[in-house]
Structures are given as C-alpha cells and as structure tokens.
Amino acid sequence: MQPVHVWIRSESRGTERRAPVVPGDVPVLLDAGFEVTVEESPQRIFAIEEYAAAGASVVAEGTWPDAPRDAYVLGIKELSDEPASLFHRHIYFAHAFKGQEDARRTLERFRCGGGRLLDIEYLIDHGGRRVVAFGYWAGYVGAALGVLHLAGRLAAPLAPMAKHELDAELEGAGKAGADQLLALVTGALGRSGRGARQALMNAGVPTTRWDRQETRDLHKQALLGHDLLVNCVVTHTPTTPFVEQADLDQERRLRVLADVTCDVTGPTNMLPVNTEITTWLEPVRRLHGGTSEHATAPLEVIAIDNLPSLLPREASEGFSADLTPLLLGLAGDDGPSGPWRAAGRAFDHAMDELESP
Ligand SMILES: NC(=O)c1ccc[n+]([C@@H]2O[C@H](COP(=O)([O-])OP(=O)(O)OC[C@H]3O[C@@H](n4cnc5c(N)ncnc54)[C@H](O)[C@@H]3O)[C@@H](O)[C@H]2O)c1
Image 1: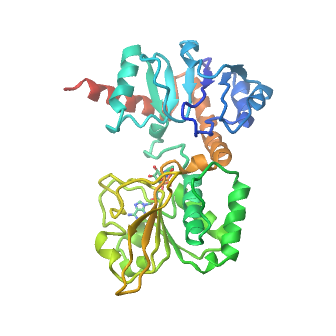
Image 2: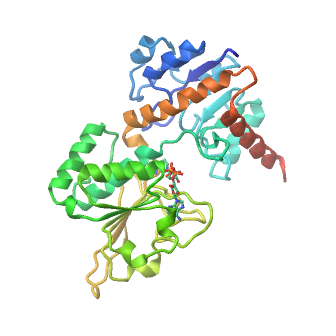
Image 3: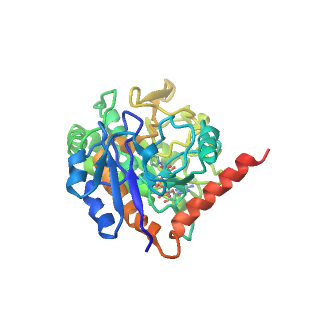
C-alpha cells in the first residue's frame, strides 16, 4: 500500500458551500493509513472543528500551493487564479477537456508546473459510466424549483438551504394545489431522474416517467399534456428534441421546463427552445408568451447549472459516500485503481491536444 496524502482545499467561489469529503468520512481515510489535511473555509457547510474532531490536520485557507509536492489537492470547483504554475496532482471538476471557456488557460497552468489534473467527471468504470456525480440532488432541487414556481412559491434570489426547509415548501405547495399538476421526468432512470421523482413524490405531484424506451417514438402530444417537464437526459447522439419552437404555438398544458441537464448550447440539447442558463438571481425566464388562439399559458424555463449547491449538506454527503471509497483506490500497490487511471488518460489526451497545432 502506498502512502497517500489528501489535502482538502477551500473553494475559491464564495457561494460554493459543498465539500468533496465530509467530516464523517475522514476516519475511513485515516484508518486506511492516509494523511488528511483540511483547509479552513469561511463558507463550507461543515465546520472546521468537525474535521479536526474526526482526526484531520487543519491548515489555513488557500495554503494548498505550499502543500507537500506528493499531496493530492482535492476540491469541487475551479482553483483560484494564482499560482500561475500548478505542480500538484489536483482532483476537482475543471471543465477543461472540451474546449470550454478558460480550458486552455487551466491546462497551460498544469503544463507550466508539471502537475496533473484528475478530473472527477472523467472517473469512469469499465463500462464508461461515471462513478461519482452530484446528479441525484441536482434532479431533486431542479424538480422542486419547478413545482414551487408553478405553485407561485419560488422566491428569488435563491440561496443554499437545508433539506427540511425545502421539503416543508414542497409539502406546502402540494397542499396548496400542486398535487393537481402533472409532471413528466425524462431520463427518469438516471441519477438526477431518481432525485427528481423523489422531490415530486414529496410534493404529491403525479409523475410520468420516461427513459430511453419511452422516448424512442416520441409522443409529442402526451409530452405537451404535462404542466412541468423535468429534463434529466444524458445523450451523446443527437435525437429528436423534446420541445421545439414549433411546439410552442400548439395547444399545450406545458408551462415550465426544469432543465436539469442544462446542455443548453450543446449539439444534443433536448430543449432547443432554450439556449441560455438561468441563475440563482433570476431562476426563471420566459420563453414564449402563450397563444390566445389556444388559450395556452406562457412557457418558462429554469436551467440552473449548479443546482446541488442549493442543498450543500445532502449533496456533499452523497458525493463523499461515493468518492471516499474511490480515494482508497489511490493507494494500490499496483498503482491507482481503474477510474483514476481513466481520469489520467483523459488528462494526457487533453494535454496532447493542447500541444497539437
Ligand atoms: N444542473 C445541475 O446543477 C447539474 C448537476 C449535476 C448534473 N447535471 C447534469 O444532469 C444530467 C443528468 O445526470 P445523471 O447523473 O442523472 O445522468 P445519468 O447518466 O445517471 O442518467 C441519464 C439518463 O438519461 C437517459 N436517457 C438517455 N437518452 C435518453 C432519451 N433519448 N430519452 C430518455 N432518456 C434518455 C439514460 O438512459 C439515463 O437513465 C447530466 O447532463 C449532468 O451533467 C446537472
């Protein structure tokens, strides 16, 4: 077994309250012989005292550039802009392998310092499936926001909350008439689809579930016959979109799209009537004013790309439960386990692309 040092850094984004490993999972790493260091953080949902009580070493916020060279620096979202060169092995969601904004700059920083990026999005199993993701709580919050908006109970700006507060709102919405709504979840068998179904169940909203099989021959009228569509589909092959511009002038019951997938500019956007995300400040945007001819209501969209951050405690707990056993795989005598090797290959590929003209 190889000695491993995991350094949990503070998040650079002020609204990011989640943690990749929760205090309750620190002993799992310590018992396996890991060294665990945690940076202080003003916004993290878990107090630093909880990490200290669990046995982690505590250091000041933002000190990871001074971490021992062999430490794995672990976070969730983007790094701070400094230092310019990165020489550690970093584990986080960098969104830097598909030509996204800032991708090149991020990769250049790794090249400059000789560090490595093990992007959590690229931790996959033999079947190519992601092994750790925030999907469940994204679906839960996405569906909840859709119901609350339809019930006239969504107050902006949004802010991180506790699950019991959100559930109380959902229950209230159900009692106030949301249980008369009809919801459709697409991608219903996936991680976020399951979360969405649970939130709708908590609100008492009758829900239709569609996954690949049910959308093979898309029944557009059936789709438009729901008040709320919660889209949780992941697909890499362009297929018939669920809602297109031409559908909006049709007679329809559909009033709100809660787009959990948020693939708003991608070639496989299943809701091409929308091409922009919405935000915590303005969670809902109007896409169509409705038609007098059919007496149809306006159509609105909620497409927030950081939904799990609104339930930071539950999102962190679920994520940590999946990530912690994987971290143990960093210590293998024969080198890191399969998912880490897959993430390493994705990084090498991205760096090769960077070099090519
Ligand atoms: N908005 C956010 O804050 C947020 C947070 C986390 C994840 N996400 C995104 O949510 C999406 C869902 O993630 P997940 O973890 O639930 O994925 P998942 O792979 O667990 O589930 C996707 C589901 O889509 C189904 N599917 C694929 N093609 C379909 C089709 N044509 N019709 C119907 N169903 C189809 C699959 O069978 C699967 O059940 C991802 O794009 C992810 O990046 C968004």
